[in-house]
Image (tube, rainbow, N blue to C red; front, side):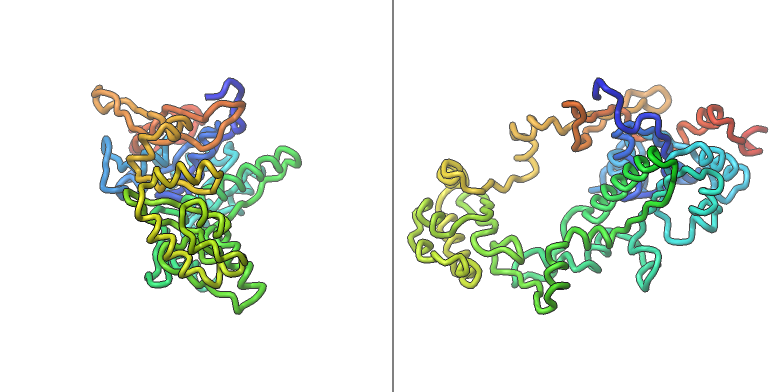
Length: 397
């Protein structure tokens, strides 16, 4: 933690969202110092508690829930129950931010759409993340990461010309959307500090995927004849010439970025590349250059080539596996790992979970917080007492 107050200390965020994009955005705000209260259904809570990441469950909740809901409080409320809804509205009246990722129209039917909330709390920053926006033919489609990647065309950028569409193997749309939403919220809070005005912040999985492809989209919008033409095997970018790519070595893989082809050929002892003096040939002759590189680099170890290329300040890097990354001194130097924990049930031992910290530093300090994700409804009674919110009739009997 930093010695100075964190940027969002004193801000109250109500997180109505589920699964990944919305909860991750709220978690990012919590990392920046905001108090985040997660509003969950009494029966089952956030669906992310049950949809297991890699099949891993810790202490009754999925690993993905733990790592995207750390440093939050949980308030259980049935939004279709008038008593519970009245309690939630009491929280809304004092909140700074609302985050939600229901399908378009659901929050409005619950009486918690932006117009209703702004009437109750004019300074609220109301942040929504959807699958594909609130209008158009896709607005009611399931907002899911792989589906958003596919509609955006992103899988056509991965792999070589001989490969089928290759999606990115992480929840990229959710992760990027959470960053955009958190960024939009912090900007809206800054505007409110200057002007007193609240407002809406909206993004979607699809918009985030389109923004990620700004190079391709901008080129095609400027010239419709420009299409995705993935190169031969080992190339790594549809719009960059040789030698940009990932190549097999005798014991692993080596990535090479923008580098003059003749200079590279001289350094690694491959005279066949020295003839490509004209930079235009690095594109027109991409296939023979790439194939010659792949065959040659496969004859020696990754470390052998790194010693040569690093000494010449060539832009290159080894391709690490996950275990290699975590064991590397470079990973440890970043101090990205952190431990979060919560008390065990019924007096049992504390549950500790390793995860990663926020990728931001303030005043030279990494943002770390050891508070784990909450159990369903863990803080309901304390929050009701603090905010003097009504209790359900059956709970008061």
